[in-house]
Image (cartoon, rainbow, N blue to C red; front, side, top):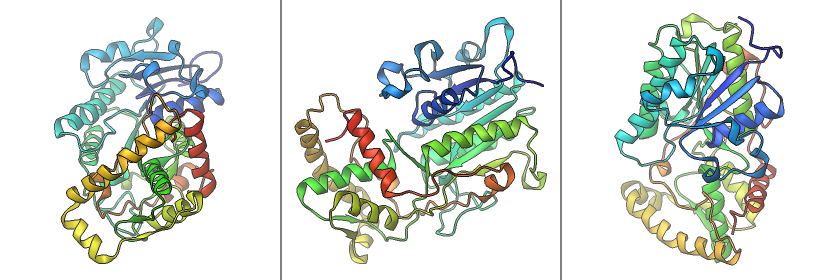
Length: 379
């Protein structure tokens, strides 16, 4: 079926459209004029979403619909278009991204959200439904995990994302692609890599060495946000083209790991941070790491107590009156001695996708910090 309108471009619906991935997908679509129409759905209003100025047009008010997509009664309002037309591509970039929440939170905001959207997309015969998942669904191993490897989610968030994947694969008529992501980083990011940068800024201000738990070899694989947005779009196009090159022996539902070529480890990030902040860095010895493994809650609480005050002082000195989403606060769930190591070759081979940011570099980290300064999040 050809795309609608004189432009021949698809109409696009993005759930979680003001989240970190959703807004960059919207920006990618806007900059390259890829869609005939875009609707961004989010629970959060644009005025409260910490949007940087470059998102003003891509995430404008006229494209935005405030709704909670986990509620079935919201689905008609989310999907309905003028004249009875349907969306061509639907991207699920929603779901609960906070760590250490209760199971019910992930069930409602990740599992129920994905299943409700997918059923509605199938009912309306959407041409491509692309769903973001996580690489934390695999049994951890330093060797890169392939899509066919054993799953054993090591975070609550991942447990419910895997359940969503399994439910989506049962929905008849759903044209779905699932993308499993590692740590996504880039300008305005406020997750894993940015937490390490905030910690480094505190240790720099205190004149102290930044020491990491576990080892330099622990895998913390990454992908740049620009490549993430490009991969989402490529996945939708490929699905719409009839999924060329997909081998049904791999399963009915296409699942792809999205990850750069850097095989990022703690050692990678430690070296970059040492260079960027000009501070001594290193790793705790085996004895301290063994103690931390047995007493992780207490260790993390102690470090958080020590760093949050100095971070607040840095923001105050920099006249940051409305602190953004950045924080050096460390999440216990994320600090476990678990490898996040992915093999992304299937997506590249099957779809022809190529990464423009093949590894985490000092230059990209410096761009992140500069973006924080521009938007006045940095101390």
